Amino acid sequence: MQLVDTHLHLYAEDFHDDRKQVIDAAIQNGVTKMFLPNIDSSTIHSMMQLCHDYSENCFPMMGLHPCYVNDTYEIELKQVEAELKSGKYFGVGEIGMDKHWDLTHIEEQTKALTKQLIWAYEMQLPVALHTRNCTSDVIELIQKLNIKGLKGIFHCFGGTLDEAKQIVDMGMLLGIGGVVTFKNSGLDEVIRHIDLKHIVLETDGPYLAPAPFRGKRNQPAYLIHIAEKVADLKQCSLEDIATTTTANAVTLFEL
Image 1: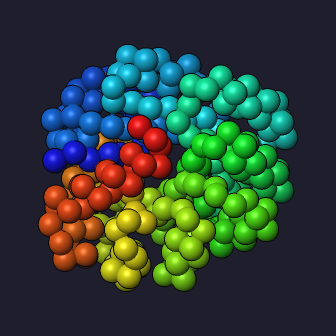
Image 2: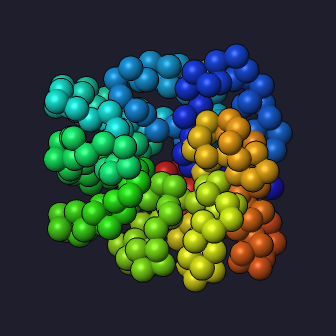
Image 3: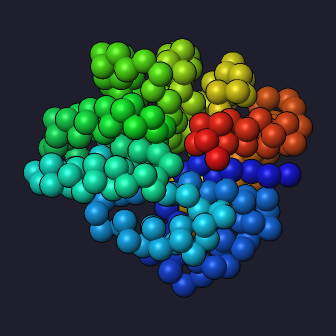
């Protein structure tokens, strides 16, 4: 059984002391493909070194994370654009908007997201979208841009069933992570009403570890717990979840 972790920050300092063991554990648990979204210019080197060292397992994306957008975001975007044009990346991410922590640079976030969405479309690359507390805003922005054929993932989806249906109607996927295992997450009804062909799995490691590891460091080997929960909600086998979500990821990223 093979699983794909479509979103995790394996290059983060949280994995500094045991990164090899974490990767080995992931592979032993069937997670053989892992997609790494970039944060900003400070993370490019460590991410790319990891993808070089584990070229059969780790695949890089390039983008400017919305929480790292500030007054100098245009300088960061120039490097993002140059990196994307190198052709080394499998997607544009992690990009998006965030209204959870600080609204100071929300206008800049919107401008940065718009530019990166257009680059993704022009380069025919999928996007990894961060939409914490603003899923509807990002949906509306994409609809206004009217970019036909844009593909990607609403990472760490935690929105409503109506938002999920809008995302699916746009031809995009829902990234389901550890939150689905949390009590009262609200994702139960979403999962039950959305066809598996619109879903991919992720850990977002080192963040948002699923039950029974909630509150601890997340890692790709824990993807099996997310898959098991989705299988329970969909009333199907774990193998069905693995087969379909893996196929969805492989198609999206054109592996």
